[in-house]
Image 1 (cartoon, rainbow, N blue to C red):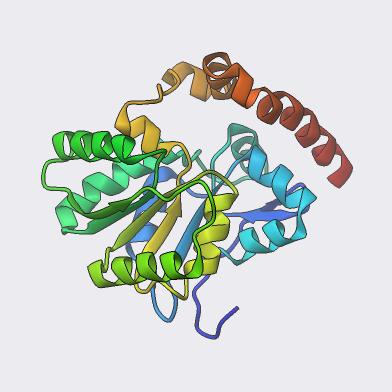
Image 2 (cartoon, rainbow, N blue to C red):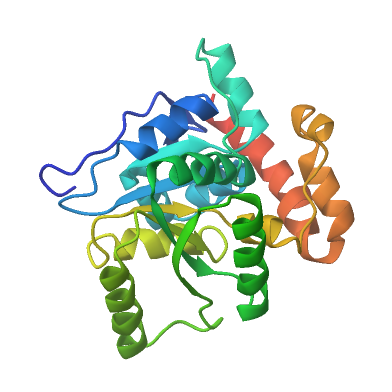
Amino acid sequence: MEKNMYKRKRDFTVCGIVGVCATTKNEFVREVFSMPTSPVSATVDLVGVPAIISAKENPKIAEMYSQATMAAIDGMPIVKIGRRKGFTCERCAAPDIMGMVFEEGVRQGKTHYFYGGKDNEVLNKLRANLERDYPGIKIVGMYSPPFRPLNEEEDSKICEEINNLNPDFLWVGIGAPKQEMWMWEHQKKIHNTVMFGVGAGFNFFAGTLEKAPEWMEKASLEWLFRLVKEPRRLWRRYILGGIKYIYYTIESK
């Protein structure tokens, strides 16, 4: 870790591999608004069960999560572990914390850049909905990257654009753990910003993906709601992933 680089203390470790920060959603928002973004930009990862599995199976991903400025909890199984350990914590799901940061950002005059989304149509819907729902929000730029990796010239160009626009918050929605890896690799290339990996958060705010009812979230059943909506895409993630998580939890005890 670079000298003087700020990293928020991890409160407990999940499956012996990923340390996470136990916070409420309000505490999360207060912390991200006060994060140092120099000498390198801050990175905020939202850690759920899929992140734990990826970290168990790939040492580079485990290292990436360990080096994030903040690793907040995005999964009720992990919240329950924290509460059993005596921590006061809540699930910091992307749609919830995004909305809270947008609201506070309007009050403080903060600026936003969005990197991700399926295509420009999604980004256009995202912009329209945010400007309607958060009057005064300052969106300085958006970019939907191709599904292939950017070449060096393309990557340099987008970094230059973001640096010139100098957003306070950079939202990255290209899927986990790809987005967290992108932030880790770019936190020295992109300056003075707080980066968030928010996955499908773009789609929720664009209105292209339905959010689970609150009762299902509280009952740890959001995975079931999303599985019913997108069975072909998500069955492996939730069914096989759930089995792996149980195994890794038992293994780490």
